Image 1 (cartoon, rainbow, N blue to C red):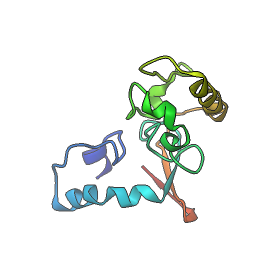
Image 2: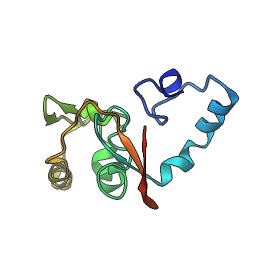
Image 3: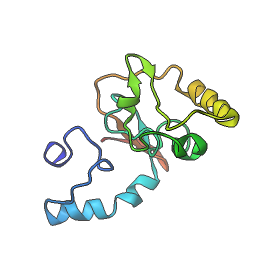
Image 4: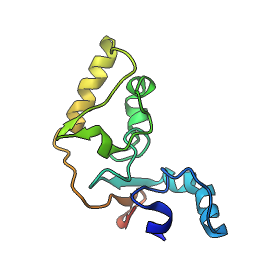
Length: 134
Protein backbone atom coordinates (compact mmCIF):
# COMPACT_ATOMS: atom_id res chain seq x y z
CA UNK A 1 0.00 0.00 0.00
CA UNK A 2 2.85 2.41 0.81
CA UNK A 3 4.21 2.56 -2.76
CA UNK A 4 0.79 2.60 -4.43
CA UNK A 5 -0.64 5.48 -2.43
CA UNK A 6 2.34 7.23 -0.81
CA UNK A 7 5.35 6.78 -3.06
CA UNK A 8 8.14 8.71 -1.27
CA UNK A 9 5.70 10.94 0.64
CA UNK A 10 4.06 10.69 4.03
CA UNK A 11 0.32 10.53 4.50
CA UNK A 12 0.37 14.25 5.43
CA UNK A 13 1.85 15.24 2.07
CA UNK A 14 -0.95 13.55 0.11
CA UNK A 15 -3.61 15.88 -1.26
CA UNK A 16 -5.36 13.50 -3.68
CA UNK A 17 -8.23 11.62 -2.00
CA UNK A 18 -8.69 9.00 -4.75
CA UNK A 19 -8.50 5.31 -3.96
CA UNK A 20 -10.33 2.70 -1.95
CA UNK A 21 -12.88 3.51 0.73
CA UNK A 22 -10.36 2.34 3.32
CA UNK A 23 -7.72 4.75 1.98
CA UNK A 24 -10.19 7.66 1.96
CA UNK A 25 -11.09 6.87 5.58
CA UNK A 26 -7.43 6.93 6.58
CA UNK A 27 -7.02 10.34 4.96
CA UNK A 28 -10.08 11.60 6.83
CA UNK A 29 -8.64 10.70 10.26
CA UNK A 30 -5.00 11.64 9.70
CA UNK A 31 -5.21 14.73 11.96
CA UNK A 32 -5.83 12.38 14.93
CA UNK A 33 -2.82 10.31 13.95
CA UNK A 34 -0.70 13.46 13.63
CA UNK A 35 -1.35 14.69 17.17
CA UNK A 36 0.52 11.97 19.04
CA UNK A 37 3.46 11.13 16.83
CA UNK A 38 7.08 12.17 16.80
CA UNK A 39 9.19 11.62 13.72
CA UNK A 40 12.75 10.36 13.67
CA UNK A 41 14.12 11.95 10.52
CA UNK A 42 16.35 9.87 8.25
CA UNK A 43 15.99 11.09 4.64
CA UNK A 44 13.63 13.94 5.52
CA UNK A 45 11.52 13.19 2.46
CA UNK A 46 8.47 12.13 4.46
CA UNK A 47 8.67 14.89 7.09
CA UNK A 48 7.36 18.43 6.79
CA UNK A 49 9.90 20.88 8.19
CA UNK A 50 7.47 23.25 9.92
CA UNK A 51 4.37 21.09 10.54
CA UNK A 52 5.69 17.76 11.83
CA UNK A 53 7.06 17.10 15.30
CA UNK A 54 10.61 16.00 14.51
CA UNK A 55 12.90 18.39 16.41
CA UNK A 56 11.84 18.96 19.99
CA UNK A 57 8.50 18.26 21.61
CA UNK A 58 6.28 20.16 19.19
CA UNK A 59 6.35 21.28 15.55
CA UNK A 60 8.75 24.04 14.56
CA UNK A 61 5.79 26.18 13.46
CA UNK A 62 4.91 26.44 17.16
CA UNK A 63 8.44 26.73 18.53
CA UNK A 64 9.39 29.39 15.96
CA UNK A 65 6.03 30.87 15.07
CA UNK A 66 7.38 34.23 13.92
CA UNK A 67 9.72 32.55 11.41
CA UNK A 68 7.00 30.18 10.27
CA UNK A 69 4.68 33.10 9.48
CA UNK A 70 7.16 34.56 6.99
CA UNK A 71 8.53 31.31 5.55
CA UNK A 72 8.47 31.17 1.76
CA UNK A 73 7.28 27.57 1.72
CA UNK A 74 5.50 26.55 4.93
CA UNK A 75 4.83 23.03 3.59
CA UNK A 76 8.41 22.20 2.58
CA UNK A 77 9.92 18.83 3.47
CA UNK A 78 13.02 18.56 5.66
CA UNK A 79 14.98 17.04 2.74
CA UNK A 80 14.33 20.10 0.56
CA UNK A 81 15.57 22.47 3.26
CA UNK A 82 18.84 20.55 3.75
CA UNK A 83 20.83 21.49 0.62
CA UNK A 84 24.42 20.33 0.11
CA UNK A 85 24.88 19.75 3.83
CA UNK A 86 23.50 23.19 4.78
CA UNK A 87 20.12 24.33 6.07
CA UNK A 88 18.58 26.64 3.46
CA UNK A 89 15.35 28.12 4.80
CA UNK A 90 13.83 30.86 2.68
CA UNK A 91 11.75 33.75 4.02
CA UNK A 92 9.49 36.23 2.23
CA UNK A 93 11.24 39.22 3.77
CA UNK A 94 14.23 40.17 5.88
CA UNK A 95 14.24 39.15 9.51
CA UNK A 96 13.73 41.73 12.23
CA UNK A 97 15.73 41.70 15.46
CA UNK A 98 13.52 39.25 17.37
CA UNK A 99 13.31 36.96 14.33
CA UNK A 100 17.10 36.95 14.07
CA UNK A 101 17.19 35.72 17.67
CA UNK A 102 14.66 32.99 16.76
CA UNK A 103 16.74 32.13 13.69
CA UNK A 104 19.85 31.68 15.85
CA UNK A 105 17.94 29.40 18.24
CA UNK A 106 16.63 27.36 15.30
CA UNK A 107 20.11 27.03 13.81
CA UNK A 108 21.39 25.75 17.16
CA UNK A 109 18.70 23.04 17.14
CA UNK A 110 19.57 22.06 13.57
CA UNK A 111 23.30 21.67 14.29
CA UNK A 112 24.38 18.07 14.10
CA UNK A 113 21.31 16.89 12.16
CA UNK A 114 22.37 14.84 9.17
CA UNK A 115 20.17 13.10 6.65
CA UNK A 116 20.59 9.72 4.95
CA UNK A 117 18.65 7.61 2.43
CA UNK A 118 16.44 5.70 4.91
CA UNK A 119 12.72 6.42 5.32
CA UNK A 120 11.72 8.60 8.24
CA UNK A 121 10.26 6.71 11.23
CA UNK A 122 7.34 7.48 13.54
CA UNK A 123 7.48 7.12 17.31
CA UNK A 124 4.28 7.35 19.31
CA UNK A 125 4.68 10.11 21.88
CA UNK A 126 2.78 8.10 24.49
CA UNK A 127 4.61 4.80 23.84
CA UNK A 128 8.27 5.37 23.13
CA UNK A 129 8.88 1.69 22.38
CA UNK A 130 6.68 1.67 19.24
CA UNK A 131 8.32 2.74 15.97
CA UNK A 132 6.84 2.69 12.46
CA UNK A 133 8.30 3.59 9.08
CA UNK A 134 6.42 6.39 7.28
